[in-house]
Amino acid sequence: MFAWIDLAISVLKLVNAIISWAQSQQMIDEGRQQVIAEVAAQIQAKVTARDKIKDEVDGMSEDQVNKELSGLVDPPGGSKS
Image (cartoon, rainbow, N blue to C red; front, top):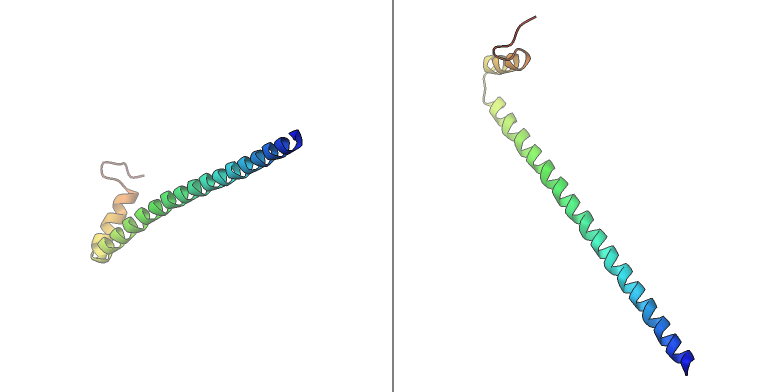
């Protein structure tokens, strides 16, 4: 009689362990998906900024581009060596 009760308890413990493992795996997968979504959003923001800058530069004359680039090397108010 007690053997059946012990067997039933063991089966329930095993089922509980399997369910806990499955839930843990699901939580890990959800975390991975969240991280992937965050990184994808960061990449998309950078691509959008790049495209905006590219469009602005494409609309500039060569002299305007050179003037802007020289401003990066020698910032306004900076000293020239």
